Length: 125
Image 1 (cartoon, helix red, strand yellow):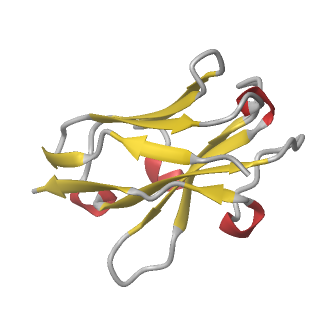
Image 2 (cartoon, rainbow, N blue to C red):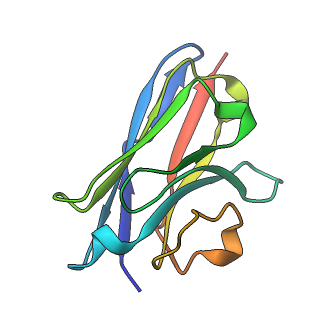
């Protein structure tokens, strides 16, 4: 497993932007598939985005397509989530997750082995 630490959450007005970062420990970060999930109060954790080890395959959940961008810097052991045009419904705790080498980045939370502690994103209307 790998240790993950998220940062970059906060309070922003609707239409604003935030950039989340997830720093990973370990020397084999480049082999991990990385994902972002979110969980709003009273709701289940849901998939947001995922990126393959080489950034060659990227997935987004429909609600964030065109507004969020996932990226990774393997030299810095970090994955990012750039969130633009934020909406109140994006309010949630955002979690970074990692899983071992896979050809296709999973979209189900149960397929990820390591999780960060989460960072709160609050979008006011």
